[in-house]
Image (tube, rainbow, N blue to C red; front, side, top):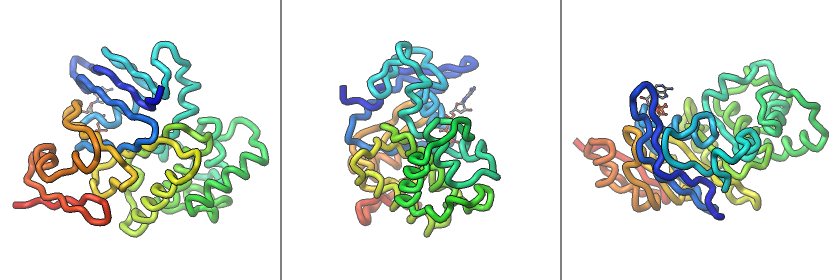
Length: 260
Ligand SMILES: Nc1ncnc2c1ncn2[C@@H]1O[C@H](COP(=O)(O)OP(=O)(O)OP(=O)(O)O)[C@@H](O)[C@H]1O
């Protein structure tokens, strides 16, 4: 019982089209994964499945040891923190930073239940941890893109999830803010009750050393998966992107250059 994600022989079809095909993916406790794939490769579809918003056409999905079909998905979702751009769009711009973070406890977008003082205390600690405690009384619409992402990550951590999914968290950030956010993400795993983190990204240099493993998704199939060091090689990625590439490693991060 050590699997956070266990996806076996999964297909997902829509309108006669195979969107995910024969997906096999196991994430064990203690691992953190990066998911890499071009536009339309099936990343969002896979995340929607992990969160129980769509069900496999064939195959088995078991998340946090809870097999789909025998599980209350709404309960399960409370153990999953999910930060994505679609979530950003749903937040009320006039909501205050601390309320946004606290709403993560209820896996709701707004605040429907009366939060307790201890909820605000926890939100404050998380905001401190992510370097955004100055945004407690700030309206969301006045925050920069990087600040919004930090608020949403703090929100995603509010229910102490076992699984935290970060879907392109650095979208729209300048390179200084991006490095700042990556450093905060790196820090998260040093916490005692750190969740398993899944990072979806288009940029291999964002695959920090904490991301022990990488899944390459192409045309709805798993192209390759394994230890990040083994997956992120020049040969592998040249095949994956169908473009001659060179990968170099600096500070335990892979950087990619197109060679002509
Ligand atoms: N409900 C649906 N009905 C029909 N086609 C769909 C549906 N959902 C996804 N698709 C198609 O499945 C493919 C994979 O989409 P998905 O959004 O999972 O890709 P992605 O890897 O997240 O892409 P991006 O990086 O652009 O966000 C796309 O061709 C998309 O048009």
